[in-house]
Every structure is written in C-alpha cells, then in structure tokens.
Length: 193
Image 1 (cartoon, rainbow, N blue to C red):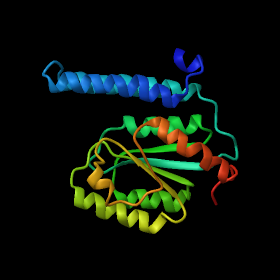
Image 2: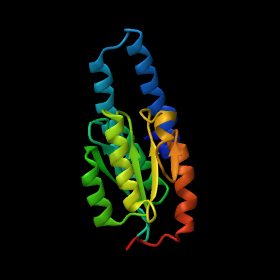
Image 3: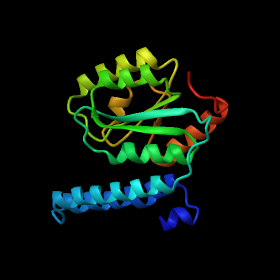
Image 4: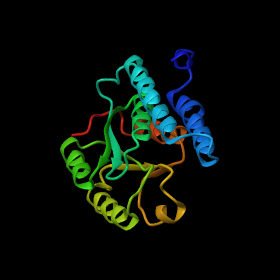
C-alpha cells in the first residue's frame, strides 16, 4: 500500500513484489524448503492485500471501456486474474475479474451479456490441453473480432500459445498495462454497447 501511495504503478507492484515473492516460494518448495500450506497461506495474504489495494484505487472514469476476464475450469489460482483486474483499473479501464475455475461456456455467456472491449484469460494451470484449446478456440472464434483477447500465465507454454489466436500475450503485468493503455486511447474511452 505504501509503495502504491508512493506512486509505484500497480503493474510494477504485481511484477516486482507479488510475483517475485511467489517465484521465491516456488523455488523453496521445489528444493523441499517450503510446504504447500505456506504457498497457499501466502496466496490468502496476497489476495487480502490486493483487495485492500483495490479499495484505494480511484474509480474508473464513467466512460471507461469495459474489460472482463478470469481463469478457466480447473485453474483455481485467483491471484493472476485479481492482479489483471487491478492493473487494468489502474490503467483507467472498468475492469472486473469474473474469478477462477470458470467453464468456457460461462465465459462466453459473460462476454455476450456484457460486451467488453477487452477480455483477459489468466492461465496458471491447465488440466487438459486439448480440451482447453478446443474451448478457447470456440470462444475466440465467436468473439475475437469484436473483443481484444489477452492471455498470460505460466501454464501457457510456447507450444500451446502457437496453437492459439489472441490480440496479445503478456509475460507479466507491465506487458498487460503496456497493451491496455494505447488500446484504451484508440477506442476513445467509449463504453461498449
């Protein structure tokens, strides 16, 4: 919170503080120096901090474009989608995370109902790659012309990404911010219809 109040962007906080901490936890776990409960506890603490940060972010402008996103079925890791929401809100988008563990059918229903200008997909875990690719392909084929699709996350290997269509792939939250800011300017901050 102090770093945000000292005018560090949310994307920098996500990349240099939160993601860095979880890389270290992951390294400790792989060496047998950390337990699974410690990683899960870290996730809970981080989610609370992110929700506190959301509470102090300025509200998006009334005419801010809408962005929605989440994580697909089998992916119960909510940090990525929560961070994406905050980064986009900090970039003056009306961003709403739909949550994690969501079937593609419900993501399609959300896009159809809300007509966002940007849709993000956080991919930390993919249970079945062929099912994921089929569901994602259907979603993109239905909405990819009207909506900018942004994907990211550790589960998206180079091989998997080569089989996907998207507007942007982001390795980190600063990449997401870098994609979203000019897109927001290009659409003139008009709300989706």
